[in-house]
Length: 295
Image (cartoon, rainbow, N blue to C red; front, side):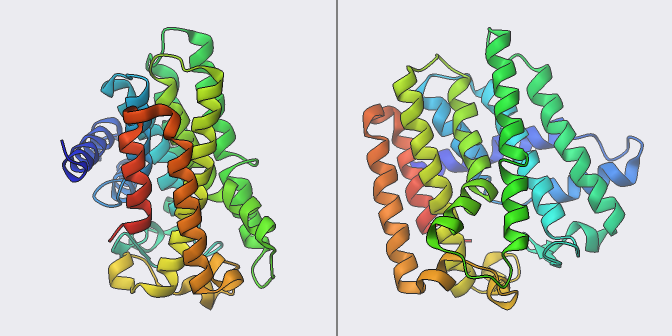
């Protein structure tokens, strides 16, 4: 199966899993459940589920188990977008080519959508048997919690808000994005890997290093796209980082150097996967897709 066919199949699996695992819109409270489904379904490239399934290939993980961890990660990601778009955060009106959740519904509903999506993510990863060892599964729950919390995504968002109008160093910018963007990408890779045959500690460390590089790579490319692509192409407001005077790789390094940085991270990520041979072919392909993706 070529990469585009595989990617389309995983995206369809991920959409079907979200549709199946989200509460139906006719279950009370109907408006909240309708808004959850509005935010979650019918959009996005599903990069994090793709990474979970690709990492699962390395250790022979069952696709059904990967569907659960991929859905859990995607629900956390979607909740973060819903909250990120609120007026108290980035105050955006467009996400994935349609009105943001608080615009389509209202701010209070959008706040509750994020809360409910987050709790559903933990419910799924806790109640489905993903590995035969309960201690290993508990560690997976803890991994997701760390990725989503104050030492991960939420903490990165706090640093991002505090950094508006500030000039960060490259080290400070990477510190922020390893958390804001990278933590969930890392969790997607590691949770997918944990669903299969246990890997040696050295292999887990190598995969973790790759995941950190992939998270930074994703953010550098996002910053480049925000500077170069149109709103129609992106499906969200283009140029907003510059308009809000937010520190980005483009504002810090300039566009040519940011592109060089992306190329360096791409090469290092590929190098980090060498130990896994052909089993990592999908992760190699996704690394290239992160850089070359079109919307």
